[in-house]
Length: 200
Image 1 (cartoon, rainbow, N blue to C red):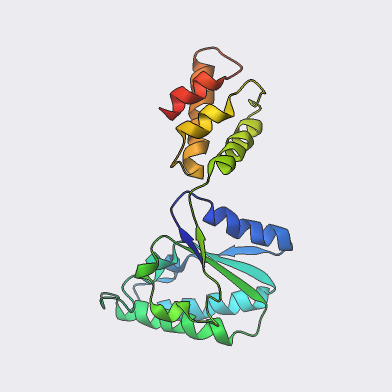
Image 2 (image 1 turned 135 degrees about the vertical axis):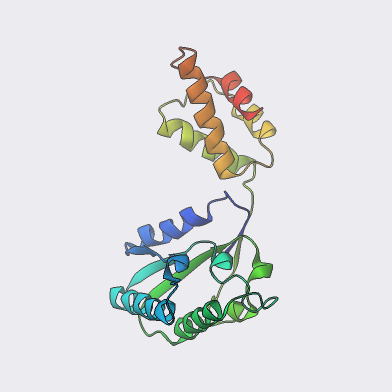
């Protein structure tokens, strides 16, 4: 279970696991399981879990899992259907015999039912924090190189100092804005000033 601030790479990490292990990645959208007809949601959940078992070995990614099971185990606001789906999923996690690696992302661990956090379900919990200065520098380099705009004249120290508290998504947005503004102004190369303007 990857917990942390939005925009810090939790979803990218899920994709990376599958890529590194050369396994198929399936995004499990639990919200799409819900159906207005009685019993259909539960049937769809059983079918989805059977499909996952049949596709093993694989990585299953559940994005923002706290929203998928909102209200379960907390203030009791979860519907009967949500509670039953949660029960099905909770039972399947420790009992599955297939080689399925589950990675879920979560922004607010306090909204998760405590049953999720015991061993045998999500065995490990990782906090994904905001990037430090060196990580921000590497991210800026990646996004600049991806767009063919990296050059040695860019003062990365100035950029690091001005981007304290920025997440990965913010840094990508900075580079995009700087490249687009430079293009509009008829500039092919971008410099430190362009990036600082985008940061501001």
